[in-house]
Structure formats: C-alpha cells, structure tokens
Image (tube, rainbow, N blue to C red; front, side):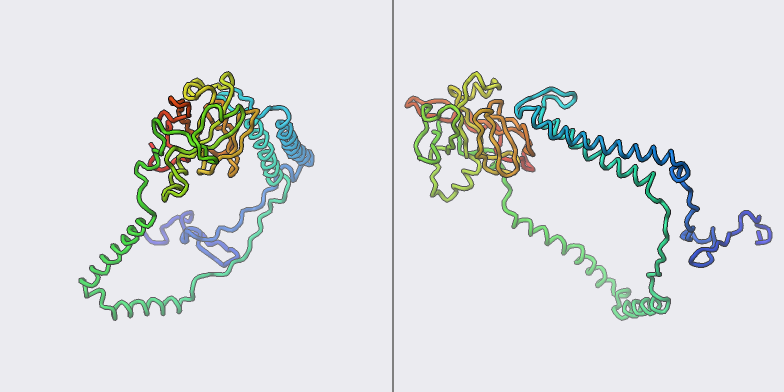
Length: 350
C-alpha cells in the first residue's frame, strides 16, 4: 500500500513543542507537552475553599486533642494496668493509649497538610527547561571507533582460549570473598542455648562471693548471683557470665501472678536472667512497688511478678527463669538450666 492510500487519520501527526517539531506517532518518547491547567472547584467557588479550610482546621484540631489525650494518658492510666483489647489481647493500658493518641496526633497533622496542599495551595505546573545530556554525534562516533580498534588489537575475537579462560577467571574470583566470612568467627552451634547453670549448682552472691541462703534475700531487694565455680579471674569469665548472670528478687507469694513462676521459686524467691532479651544489655534497675525491672539501654521493662513478661520497650520476649530450691545445708541451688536460651534471639534459634 502506498502512502497515497493511507487514510489521513493514520498519518503521523506533527506536533509543535517547546523543543521543536516531533512526530506524534513516530517517536514513542516524544514530548507531549503539559496538559491545559484545569482549575479546581476551590479555585472557582469561595464557599468550597472555605469548606476545605474548615476541613483542614478540623484535622489540626483533632491532632491537638490527640496530643492532649497523650499527655492525659500519663495521669489516667497506672503503669501496671493491663486490659484486654480485641484483637491485640492483654496489653498495657498506658502503652496502648500512648501509642494510639500519638499515632492519631501525627496522622491528622499529615492528613491536614495533604488536604491543604491538594485543595488550597497553588497547583499550577511549571516546566523547567533541561539541556540535552547526550554526547555530540562526533564524540559518540569517536568512542565507538576507539572501542572497535581496541577490540581488534586485543585479538579477543580470534583467541577463543583467552576469551573463555578470562570469563572463567572473572566468574570464579568473587568466590574468594566467601573465605572472608570465616573471619566472622566460628558458628555458635549449641553454645548460646546452654549456660553453666545445672542441677545442684549453688547461687553465689556476685558481691560477696558467698553462697546465698533464703534469709539473705529480703522482700523487695534485688540481688545478683553467678553459678558456683565461676571465678572472676577465669579466662572465659566474661563469655560465661554474659549468659549465666542472674538476678534474684523476693516477692510475697500472693503477689506472684504466674503459676509456673511460683512453682519454680522458693518461698517467693525468684531467679531470672539478668540479660535483656532485646540486645543483651545487663538489667540493673528494679522498682520495688511494682516488681518491674528496667533495662537502662533501651528502656525495655519486665514484670517480675508475672513471668518477667515484657510490658514496655523493644524486647521481644520474657526473661528466662531459673528453677531454684534449697539444698540440705540451707543454701539456694539451681535445679537445672534456664528454661530457654538467654538474651536476644539469634538466627539459628529454634
């Protein structure tokens, strides 16, 4: 079919743009230009603009009320109040209200700003001229000529053996980097799952170095202990204490909420890992009235009267508990190892 037989509707359309004339159907990357600006209803009707203004102001007011609710939550909810909220289950009333109100405060600020920009701020599009970034034709021709000349001089096209072995070397050399992974240290294997605690190991006071007895632990006090046989001058003391560090608290038995915790305790004396389950920091802050312990690194908070579960902060799970008892000499002893690996989760933890 000749060009004279092509219907006029199918012929390429030449469009005039800021960059010159281009064919509308011949160049898929042709500059289509900017569409004509269409005014919004707020640009034409002042009442519509006023409604948008009130909507934006309403969202900002909701943000302010949410902020006031955030502040009021500190006064209304006690730190240890637990409520059931579907579908989250049992959660801290204080933490939930703080997160909810702060989330609403930030959301309504963002929603108000977006609605403001879309309905009231100017939406006229402005085109900025850009200069071409491609090289001039003569430079591109020179580069291609130099590349072809270099390829011919390297004889890579004729020397198949060189070409094949070069590709093989380039493919294999990155494997050398795998050996560098060995410098990261040996795999943990089962070392992170167990500690020095075992049945019959005495609980030794970290400060005095003497075995602990029930009468040494007063109600409301916090005591730190290590396993019998772990000496401060041992070559592996740091690696062992990083897993076996223990904190001991005496709580009135009636105040212990978790049944298994009560069974694993001795006359209200409970023993938990001192290692935070977030990133492994040592826990050292204890609140006597609430039985909460706080990690000083990132403020993870655990309730020692309720299985040492997490009630605040980034920690992922409760502190492991050590089952304890009293031997024939009246000293506190371990009845086994921790019920689960201590510290934060690790990649091969099942």
